[in-house]
Length: 499
Image (cartoon, rainbow, N blue to C red):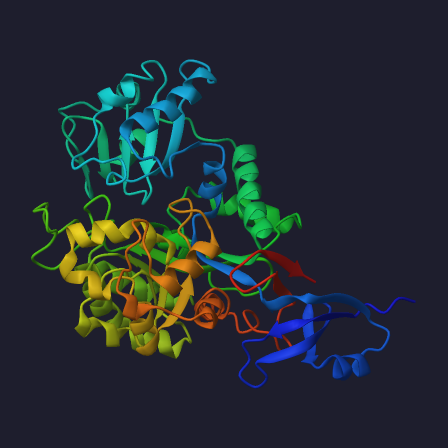
């Protein structure tokens, strides 16, 4: 009879203060049973099978703490615009897709930044009409807070010069760009994917993450209800290759309450958070700033969900055992979210819930200490593209932009992600950006905020686990989930190992 136990031989960073580094880990039944020297572990299970990885480094499994998982899966088959450096380059990529797409079929894509395209204003629909007069086109900016569409898309959506701005959004004139909720006016005209297409996108996104070395992910709402449903289906079918902590948008909280939905740890899919948006994004000039606002005179951005709403519905979320999770980019947005969270702290602490701020990109010095005990769910990879924009649009906030070290020292739990498909879920870029602070132009952004390799490892493993309330993940000790990442070197090539 074969012994079901497994011993892993590898130099192991446990992130357990009681024993930070070991040489062997004993696993059985999907759990860590022991960790220690090779001799200690061998004595506990002399007949166990051995996986010899002594040429590699073993750590707790990588976590992606902020992703739109099914949307990312869909994006893998759309027109990729990351790295496009001009309008002409966008046009060329769209034209290539037009050549291989039946007339009338929607063409979707994303990943561009206005600044990288060399634009100081918003591009028009006419620029896309030049290469796609008969295919409706909808392209999202990298931050997903702006879309660029052509005339065919506007016609199908019924959007004209006379269409009023929707609440929480703006239709840019001359027509072509839609900010925030205005994008929904056109997105609604796109035929809805089938259940099979949602399932395929969920599988593509999850499989892509697992292949990169991730063992868990936090998926952040801002997706149709069919998206989490597809992930749940994969979990039920035993086809979900990683553990998922999911958020629902706050406008569905009433339905959740009526259905009795609450935090129910266990299994590979779990509802965990309720998502709010305090503002927009930097690249779209919709991040909410304190005066004086953007240095180019474009204003102070766009507030979205009011702080009163965050406090009110956040309390209801906590009563269900769910975590309030709020997107905040600008310094004013972070101030207002912290004000709302001050009202929620006693209730959250009583339920053992750690309030979350997503992005926390630009801060005032007086707000940094207020992050004590909160999760700062941040994306270092964005620093690389944002650096030039920060210096141009908000130089007065640069010293506390992507303020990872200050947030950590203030007592916040750092949880690293990518916001894919806003940026690829590339942990290497997160390691590089957080440690070197070098942006795409070769300039260091607030170098005093740099972290060490071990800091980054913690923020990509244990930090997300603590944010999700998972005490059994992001650490290697008896009782923990047997979900690891193997590295050739820390921050280098990685592969998931789930037993």
